[in-house]
Amino acid sequence: MQAFYNRIVTFIVLNRLLIGVLFGVPFMLFGFFTELAIMGWEGSVLADSWIRLLSALGVSVFLLPYIWMSNDYYDAPFDRLDEKKRELNYFCKTNIQKKPILAFSLLLTPIIISLVFSFINGIESVFLWGIILIVGHFYNAPPIRFKERLFFDFFTHGLYASGLFFLLGGVVLTSISQLLQQPIFLLLFVFSIIDGSWIQFSAQLKDYEIDKIGKQKTTSILIGKNSSLILLQGLVCSMLLILPLYLIINTTLRKFFPDYLILFALIISIISIILYIKQLYMVREDFMKIRKMSGWVRRHFVYSFGIIAVLFINCPFG
Image 1 (cartoon, rainbow, N blue to C red):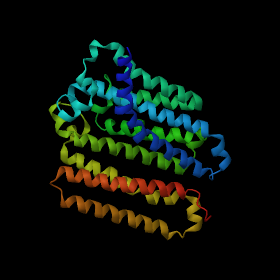
Image 2 (tube, helix red, strand yellow):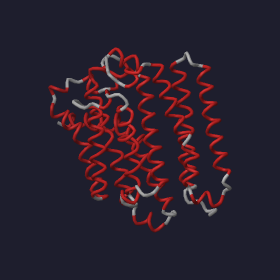
Image 3 (cartoon, rainbow, N blue to C red):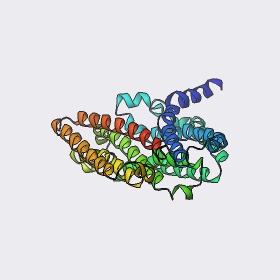
Image 4 (spheres, rainbow, N blue to C red):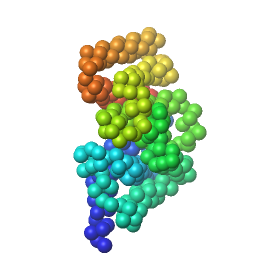
């Protein structure tokens, strides 16, 4: 019995908790600090919400592992076609149908832990927990299986793996209704969804050949490799255009900087897009180089813009 539970703990901790740390936690903290900045960095607010912040961290760490494990479960027939994926997917190496208790324990444990944490934050946190769980589950599971629905695959991934965790971070400090009335928060919420969509679509392109062999109906398979690369670039370009939109709606910054700063930012964004597309054109025949180059642009832009955007929501200049 002890060996049985050791296998569960090892699988969850070593293979899937890292997913929550890499995806759920950063986006939740992004939403939290965005709202804290909108509220003027009030120390009293932070002091009153530290327990709720810790509980949101707990939800972020434990909820995504279930979704990724359900992905492993439903994708096991496809992952067996690839040696690397076969080694990483526990369900490819174990006849799980003959071990229902093990399967049930693996999938149920992170759900229960994340639900307990969400109750600490109140009903709205539980509501978001439920939406993330439902969208994430049916992203993988039939009969809906969003990951094999045209365009729904990367959009729903952006919703459950990033956007809703961003919203969860904001809920730590205020209500959903208040968050939906804040243009900057909504803009960065959309930004998070786009970023999460890019992450999934990039991974989908990496698995293009395996998905094709497995006859999976992902967007990249349905629209073809060339159209997929254009879509991947479009997601990056849309994130590059967020900067001027951010400056337009950031009234605090506009009080301090002259109006031509917005025009300057728009020009910089357009130049960045042109340079990005030009670089991709030079390697247009190399599928993986295009994907890696897009990843480099996305990583540097997302990290830098995310930090700068939060710091200047309520800048000290105004």
